[in-house]
Length: 273
Image (cartoon, rainbow, N blue to C red):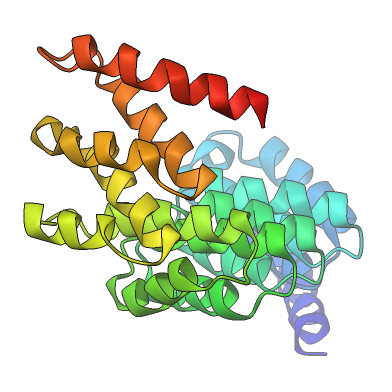
């Protein structure tokens, strides 16, 4: 292939000009591109011995490191690809984006999930598009839930309609709905009191949970009356969310005194069910 030809050309150049630092570096890079790490590292050792100061410069060191990482990402062993995936993230370099993209497309579901955890704070458009696609089409619920959570942390605003649909969907598993609520909380930070009242009065329990999640996240103590009202909600999940929200707010003036007498009977009822 082309990389094998590059190795042959680099070898010929090193033999013709044995003192050339540039040709030796080209040979190391060619070996790495060809996937021959053993010869690349042997050439690197010879290069470091001959040019001790030059071998410490950032350029060639980074090229060697990224060459090894890129080869690891192509390995047939999932464990090796996993290490390469984490290394590409830690490298904090534009070259790592390509490998993280590869991770999001990996055939191994665990690697896709790890890749999602690594990209969750990134704003690269290519990665955002892949994450959004996984949030809609990933067949495994655990991986899809992770992708849905990333829609919020990556601030993918165009995902709001899809997230709203997931929250409203009665037949989806709780894990997906909870992830969608978490993302909507991060994407819809400017909800007014009127918006929260509307959500809390929705016939969809997921939207009532969303109202509580926003109140909790934004520490909207003035909206705590909504949480008190939802303590008597027909949905057990909504009641649990209301209790969580009010317990979180209990230290605020005037809220704690009202909270305990109202939640204790509900907690007793929950235990009796």
